[in-house]
Amino acid sequence: MTAPDAIDVRRASPDDAPAFARLMGDPEVFANLMQLPLPSADQWRQRLATPAGPDHLHAVAVRGGDVVGSAGLHPVERLRRRHCAMLGISVARSAQGQGVGTALMQALCDYADHWAQILRIELTVFTDNERAIALYQRFGFRIEGTHRGYALRHGRYDDVLAMARLHPRPPTLAWPPG
Ligand SMILES: CC(C)(COP(=O)(O)OP(=O)(O)OC[C@H]1O[C@@H](n2cnc3c(N)ncnc32)[C@H](O)[C@@H]1OP(=O)(O)O)[C@@H](O)C(=O)NCCC(=O)NCCS
Image (cartoon, rainbow, N blue to C red; front, side, top):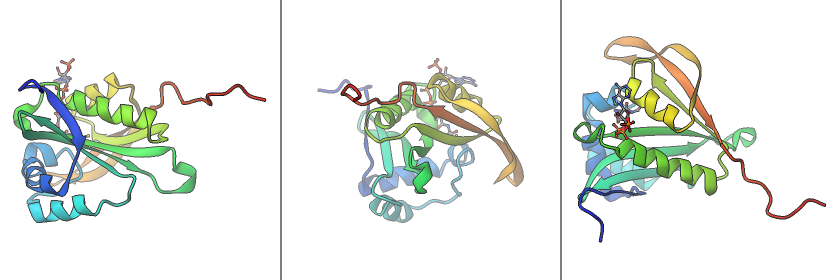
């Protein structure tokens, strides 16, 4: 049996749509993502039912039966960039600072490193999002540069950092060469 405050990470399903709409409807959350205000459960149900591609991962963190966070790993489709994926993450305001983001990052990095042929994980993060930047750095992401005036947030074009993590131990063949 799972302890009441244990955090489980599982794949999201269309039935999680109301939880996604609630999570992404919080200005403290969507402002730091590339999401828009006023999300609806219908919109999310459609998105979760028909992901952009079969290899896209939408995961949720569940604690005490409630969805308290979500994270996604989205492969870059171009042939020469098939080793890359974009990461996004969000945790409900009431559950932030309690290890939910860490659990989601752990699950996504494990999925990328050991199963999904991903060697480079990329993301953007607003330059003032210290908590997110610290979390990413703990998982081996490095700052690669700044995109100036990258996205409209609260009526202002704000800067984001480009961050990426290269696979710490790229997979090798299991048999000796030649
Ligand atoms: C960023 C976010 C995903 C982090 O998730 P979380 O569940 O709060 O993260 P965790 O609790 O696992 O870990 C946060 C860590 O940052 C630390 N931290 C908290 N506030 C901090 C701050 N202002 N500066 C630096 N570190 C901070 C915490 O102490 C914790 O470190 P620890 O594990 O060493 O104690 C979450 O806050 C969130 O969803 N924010 C809104 C949406 C968002 O910004 N998404 C990212 C977009 S790029």
